[in-house]
Length: 141
Image (cartoon, one colour):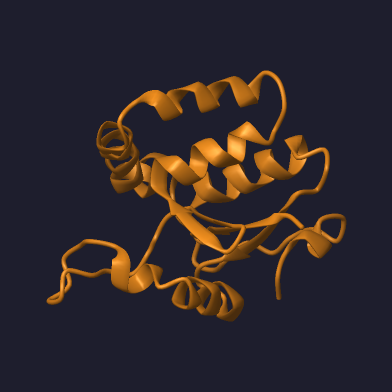
């Protein structure tokens, strides 16, 4: 059936990552939706991610603002989402899945550190990316 990747649609690095996945996903397994889109917000909300993500909110929650993988009715976030995605991209990228043996707390520490600086390092768009006509069918609308 496939999986859905939710991503930060205004992040230049995230958009490049989506393009990379599209290019290397030979089977067309992944579909995509920006977290800022109506479809992306609905999916994030339906998985309960907004309330489960620890953060600075008064109730300990914060909105999800980085990559999320929804696969088999389960949501995966942060480093686990990234590793599960590369696992499906074939050799040599699938070799990166070996990092799953690193404890999640350690993986997520480095993921969060990178995510914190991604706008400074790669920039940010004012609006979500618009998919090209060739890949538009891979995006949820």
